[in-house]
Length: 338
Image (cartoon, rainbow, N blue to C red; front, side):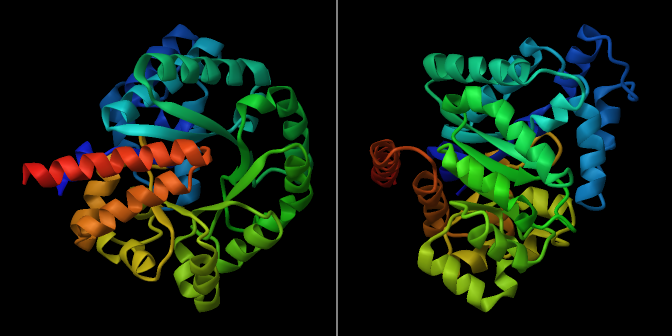
């Protein structure tokens, strides 16, 4: 199973680029930009990654973001993640970025997106890994701030496939952003939203009905609502699940209690992703390995999760088919070797 997980081609659909900031890169960028860190070593940074909930993680996450100031910083950050993903046989990835976390620090929108986009172009031509960019609104800020961010993004809309919703979920329901998402769709953006991680199943309903999303990010609390599960299964709405993140943030008290296997058995289109890999001790492969071991996922479960990730992506039908064919070829070769 481990060999299968490590070798098979995959797609990742739920990964925050700022959340891939490894402590080693943090210590490289801080002196380059004259930023004093409240840590003396890489080990000290890692030891601080003990979270009690989503908010305790966000507090440290935003502290790390301060070292990102120049276009080259965003290039280096994105390039490092794409190289890591490529090393884990990720063929395609759809990355979130949080422009408000940078604009509010005085950075220009184009500084952020130019660095990210340049790394995407270089990684595709040099490594063969394709990627798309999803712009998230911080849900704990106002809807008017989100609208302003959307307006700033319009000149770059060819570089952004969708808009999403992230950050502190409790008390920030999706319906708060209905007008912003309506306008985003008018401009041709697809829509996704974090819902049903710490927030209730009701937030998933709102994301579907008010924001008209194509995918639900996390969505693990859907299992508490039978009617919602029936709808998600019937419409095959993808759920971008992040197992290590869920356990690290105490959404579930152990991996053995994670509902991923149950979600698959209920016919849901679940996928496995890494969320904020630098903070949650694992990229996509580590997430697959942890959840496979804890829930005793079999060969069919693992293959289903990967197929789901290709089919749930924002690639064209032709590009999806190419990835599915590559997966089938890999599985056939593996079968012959055995």
